[in-house]
Amino acid sequence: MCGIFCQISKKNKIQTNHFIDALNFLEHRGPDNTGYFIKDFIALGSKRLKIHDLSDAGNQPLLSSYGNYQIIFNGAIFNFREIKKQLTSRGVIFKTETDTEVILEGYVHFGSKILDYLEGMFAFIILDCVKNKVFIARDSFGIKPLYVYEDKENIIFSSEIKPILKTPGTKLKLNKNNFDDFLLFQSTCHPKTFFDGIEVFSPATLMEIDLSTFKKSSREYWEIGNFNEDIHKEDTEKIILESILQCWDTDRMTGVQLSGGVDSSLMVALLRQQNKSQKISTYSVDFDDTNIKHWHPRSERKYINQVKSLYDCDTNLNTFTNNEISDSFLQSIYFFEAPLYGASTAMYFLLANKINSDVTVLLTGEGVDDIFLGYFDNWNFHQSTSSLAKCFVSQDTTKLLLDIDSKTPLLENKILEILGKDFDRLSDRQMATVLLIKNGLQGLLSRHDKMFMSASIEGRPPFLTKKLAEKRFSLDDDDIHSKSIGKKNIKKIATRYFDSEFVYRPKIGFSSPYGDWLSDENIWGKYLNDLNLDLLSNFLNVDRLRDIIDIKEPNKKFTGNNLNVLMLLTSFQAFYSIYFENVYQNNSIDIPNL
Image (cartoon, rainbow, N blue to C red; front, side, top):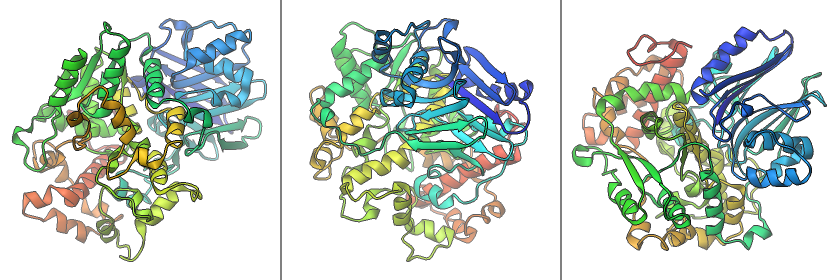
C-alpha cells in the first residue's frame, strides 16, 4: 500500500532535501501522502496509498501510543483484525483503523514474535528508540519488495531501486555476473540484482541494526517446507476462502484480476458464494488472435465469459493496440528496474494504467501454481535435480552463448545454489515447490507489484499465505501432482464450481504473442535492431548470438528457444540504455532522467 525508504548514515547528518528528492521517486507507489522523519543520522520516509482508514491518522511514519517506536510499512496484513482483537484484549487502545498500527503495537507487546502472527504481504521498518535500534522484516514469500544497499557511509532500505540510485554517494554500476541466471530463468537469482551493491532483502527474514555500532544481525523467522499438524486437519478450500475474504476487506474499490484460468476464476466463484448480491468487478487482458503468426492463440475470452455467466461479475476486457504495446516496452522496463520478467510484464503495466481510475486493490491468483506445481502438467519428475525446474533458454543454448563447457551441470548447480541447504528430507515434488517459491515466484511477484504500483494499485495474492503453504507440505505428493497433472487438489476444488472441460483444459498462463511483437519493427522490432553487440560481447559469445540474429526464416527465428534469446537480450539492451546510458530520456515516451 506504500513505498518506504530508510537511510542510516554512518558519518554525516542526513540532508533533508537530498532524502526527499530520493523519496519522491516512490511517488507512484503512494500518491495519497508523503511523510518522513529525519533526525541526525536516521531517516524514515513513506509514500502512502490509503487502503485501510482513509483518514490522515494512518499517515506514516506512524508513532506508537507512547511515542517510543515508529514504523514505515508497505503491504497489507490479511488477518490484522484478528490480531487487533488479541491486542485490544491486552489493553491496547488503537487510534487508527490501519493494519500499520497493528504491526507497530504488536511489536511493542510481542517484539520480533509479532512475525509469527502475521499473514499477508509486508516490508516494514521500525525505529525502536527504547533499544536504539532499527528492526526490519519482510513477508514469508517476498510479495512486497525491499532492497538493501550498504557502503562505508550509508545503509539504505527501499521499496524500489531508484531512490537508492538517487541518494548522494551511491555508485551506479552494472552487476555483470548474472547472465547464466538471466538466460536460464529470465531474472537474477536471489539476492542479486543487475545493480552492483544493491541486493534483495530476503523473504521470511528479520534484521536488527544497532544504531550505535551499526552492527547487524539477521535470521529467518519462517521456513518453506514446514509441516503443521494443526493445519493438516483444516480443509484446503476453507483456508483459501478465509484468505480471499480477508483480502477483499478494504476501504477502497476492490476487484479481481481475472485471467480466465482456474485460480482467478475460483476466486470469483468463492466470493459470489459468500455474497449473492455484492458487485464483483474483474479486469482482464485479452488478445486478438486473428493475425497471430508466431504463437498459438492466447485469448481466454471464452472462459472469462463463462465465469461472467455463472457468477454474475462485471467483466472488463482490455485489448491493447500495437502503438500501446510498443510504448509499454520502455515504460515497463523503467518501472521494473530490470529486464522484463516475460513480455507479459508490459501487459500488466498497460492494464494497471488503464484501470487505476476504477480500482485501487486487485486480487490476483499469483502463487497457486508455485505452491501446488501447476506449471508441471505433462511433466514427469525423474529423481534428478534437473527435473525440478524448467528453463526459459535451454541449458545447452545457455552454455553455448556463455562459452561454458558442455559437460558442466549448469542447471543442476544453479538449482542447488537456489535451494541453499540440505533438503534431503523433502521429496522431489516438494523440492520443486521450494525451488519455485525461492526463484520463479520472485520474478512473478516483482513484476506484479511494480507494474500495478506504477499506477498506484495494490495487488493482493490470497493464495500466498503461510497457512496454505504449510497445508501443501502436509498433503501427500500424489494429491498435488501425479499422472502428469499438477495442482490436482486445487482443480478438484474448482470442479465444484466449473465443469471438467473448464478445469482440466491445457494451461496457457498469462503469456503473450511476443514473437509477433519482436518481429514487427513498428512494435518491439525496433528495439531488437538496437542490439549493441560490442556491449553484449562483455557478457556472451556474440558469434553465437549473431547466428540467431541472422536466421532468415521468421518461424524459426521468432519461436521457441531462438525467440527467448532475442527477447531477453532486447529487454536487457533497453534496460541498460535506460539506466546506464540515458538513451531514451529525450524520447516521446516519459522516462525520467535518473
